[in-house]
Image 1 (cartoon, rainbow, N blue to C red):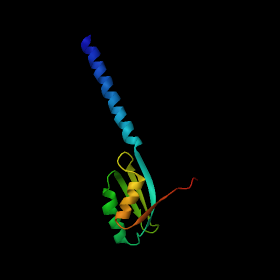
Image 2 (image 1 turned 30 degrees about the vertical axis):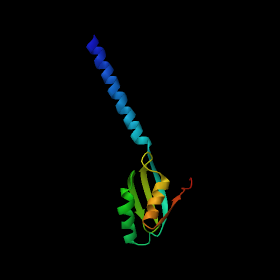
Image 3 (image 1 turned 90 degrees about the horizontal axis):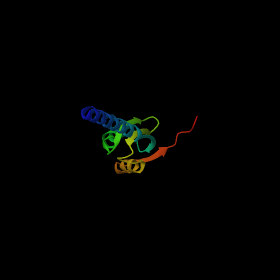
Image 4 (image 1 turned 90 degrees about the vertical axis):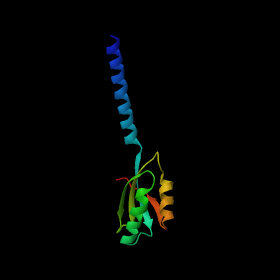
Length: 103
């Protein structure tokens, strides 16, 4: 009887830990679109991709040269919007968050 109770308790603990980790992974990402001043050519895009993509907490980066925008997905527990703006400033570019209009 003790073994059955112990096995059930271990199984319950394992499932609750797995669910808690999944919920934490899903909730701490944010995507922000930035208007990037100074991103005027393909070399500028490469510069952004080489530097911003490897900033702490950044998980995805998409640059669009014709619109001069960069869409950055990052982990909110590792970095913030201000940190990403500062990273753009370090490479000589100004980044301003673009607030999407509600449709």
